[in-house]
Length: 385
Image (cartoon, rainbow, N blue to C red; front, side):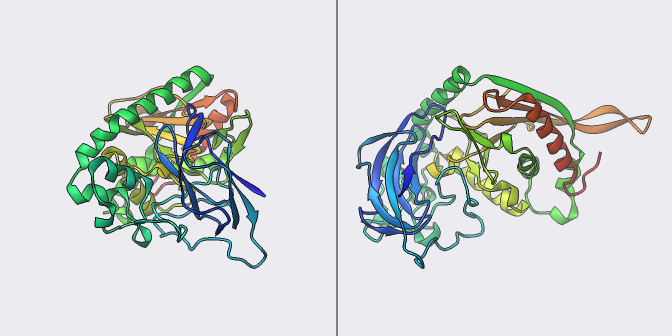
């Protein structure tokens, strides 16, 4: 039997409340099929099946389950049975094999035929309840016609009210998480001024004209590739104190909102194209600022990027967002007077600071990440020294 457990999505998260089971006891499900909705301290998330098999429900609807507690058990499917769902759309590829938590990356997936009512994401159901919108009256724009949060917002042009309605709950969750991080995580900060030339001409490269790419998008690509070289910082610390590295980089991106900083996740960022990164970053930032972010887009991150380069910020010390092991902070790109081949020149430089949970990794790993990031920035289109 394979246990389906509740993952820890933030350092302050201790448990979750089982909402609705999307399958029935004894159902046969596919790997990746949504099983249950769980309400956590930040949002409602949907947990998926890690393997194909027969479901035995352990936690009843309405019950509270501790982190790492068992929600259900799966009896492996017989040989020859279907083992995976059809591929997601290209814009939202599923996590690579071995992803840390069983959280689907997009807004749609196949669910049990026994589920009653319109097929809708948890965020859409929550917003519809808050705003008195009948889900049956909406036409879903998500994969397979699934109703997603933007459909509810668009039905009554409720962008700002939705954000206001969600702000109090989100602010409470942000405060709990940041407080727990400061209290429980021994931080070590490793910083340096990196050669940032690859970030400057890359935006203006002819091949990228019209892409809408920002410095943040290039940083996402470079950092994701750098983390692949330093796997001990692309990891999470589990409740039992063990550190679990991820074979894929699921990069959380810090986004400022009226309720505080929220960090949606760009899944498998290291294997994405620039176009895919731009599309996903725009989608996540827009949904986060509107307050319509789907809970599944907040879980499963393996490291966080916080870029304040749009402001006159050279340095800041970030707080590691547990259970992640590390967080990377970047400031603005400025021209610095440096020695170039024995002469004085002005070259673009950027301060980068890596915050590390010292229980899980040492500062030396932060130094290696800075070196890897500088190499990856130089490999960007049009990179210069």
